[in-house]
Image 1 (tube, one colour):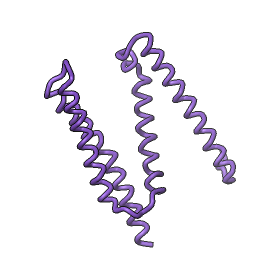
Image 2: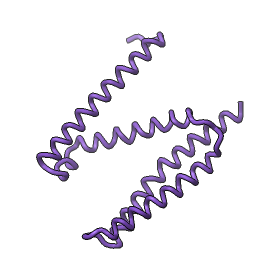
Image 3: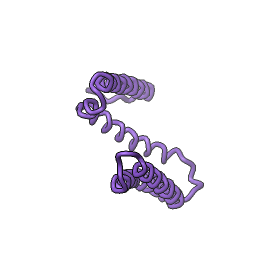
Image 4: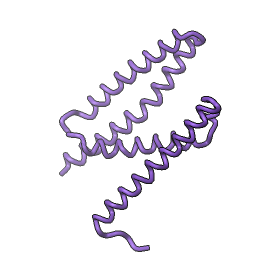
Length: 143
């Protein structure tokens, strides 16, 4: 198979891939929604499509972060942006942890667990975005 050299054809190919991805994601959401309506949350989460949907969503978000980091203006220090994000993440984790602990049927340990999971899961994208911004800043300063 020959490589595509024409930029217009490359752009059209990317648009086609985007449309196919949208239709595929919509189909997965419809199947999961049907499982949720007919069998409940547990059946939806037990469906292997749920794992596929979550995996593709996370990968798509990480790939989009790379593009967003390149598109941002370089006015703000990446370290300052990371610190602001970390503070917001800590407040969100604390708020959800406290809300969970105060909810009927849950206790203090459940609140700590939920808040800790959200904190740990939130740190990874923040550090990844920091590294992208730092790499971009280092690349523009060397030129």
